[in-house]
Image (tube, rainbow, N blue to C red; front, side):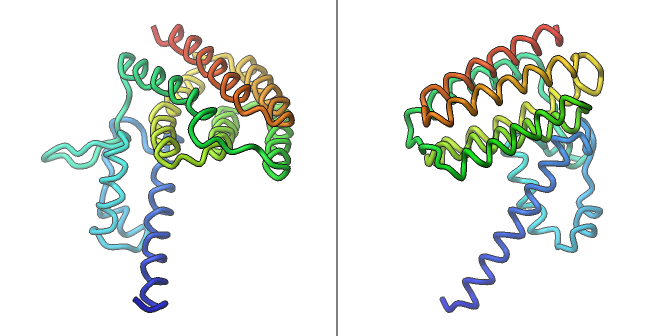
Length: 226
């Protein structure tokens, strides 16, 4: 294959990934709410693409548990019930331990600097916390943590599970079931603790801290949803 063909394939793949991230972010930001039907026609027109590549993206989102196809109805945004949420969170906890053992990546100076910038943004959020800001920085933290392993299957699974559960937090924050100021302070402490471990280059401690904070978050959320 010549360079032109490779560039076309790369361009098509980039467009696929961009559209996938865009739709996933909209679902997780509740721009598309649970139970809402997505119009293929409207999406194809919005993004200027044909139904074929769009359906590939929708199929991937369905495989990730964010959408479901209902015969005679169309593509519907999913939601998590309490039992499924518990199963997903418990799997996320187990996977967190693997970040310290499966192809761990020691944080370099650039990564630590990136995390310090995140810490600064989280501190600023404390001055005027919003559900959107909290969710955005929580997502930024998670995506940063992914870079501490080079194990591609682990990264893929962890990412899928994160995006399946992140909407639960945002729904609860918007419904005022969660004290946003308290959660923001807890989140700040988590980021501060993780930064301290990162500055020491201790990947084992990082994984343990992340697991502990995730477990506590799940416990608080479970109590609210009872």
